[in-house]
Length: 158
Image 1 (tube, one colour):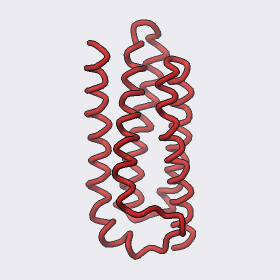
Image 2 (cartoon, helix red, strand yellow; image 1 turned 180 degrees about the vertical axis):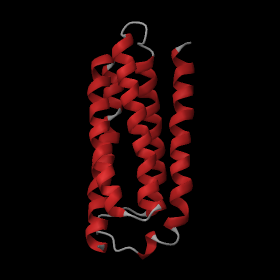
Image 3 (cartoon, helix red, strand yellow; image 1 turned 90 degrees about the vertical axis):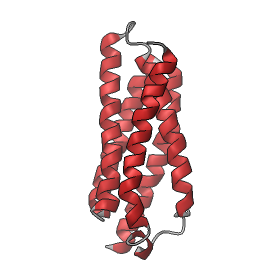
Image 4 (tube, helix red, strand yellow; image 1 turned 60 degrees about the vertical axis):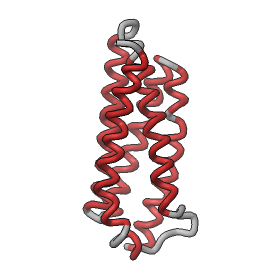
C-alpha cells in the first residue's frame, strides 16, 4: 500500500471522528452552550469547525507518515499508532462529555488526559518521522487552548 492510500485511509478515519463529534456537539451549541457564561477569549462559534478540520487533516497525514514506516520500525510504529488511536478516541469522548452530557467538569478531567496522550503520541511520532511529529504541534497547541477554555467555562458556570 502506498503512502497516498495510507493518507486517504487516515483522512477518512480522522474526519469521521470529527464528524461524529460534530453530530454530538451541534444540538447543544444551539441550546445549552449559548446559555453558558464564557471567558472574554472565547472564540466565535464559527472558528471551531475550520480549525478542527485542519487539525484532523494534519493528524491524518501525521499518522499516515508514521504508518508508512511500519516495515522499517514495526514495533515502534505499532506502539505509536496505538497511542494515536487512543488519543483519537479520547478526542471524540470529550465532545460527548462536554456537549452530550453537558458536564464541563468531567470534560475538563478528560481533556487533560487527552492533552497528555497527544503529547505522548507526539513524542513517539517525532522519533519515527520528524514531519509527523511536527504536524501534531498545532493539535497540541489547540487542545492546550481548549483545556484553558474548558476550565474557564467550568469555573464561570459552577
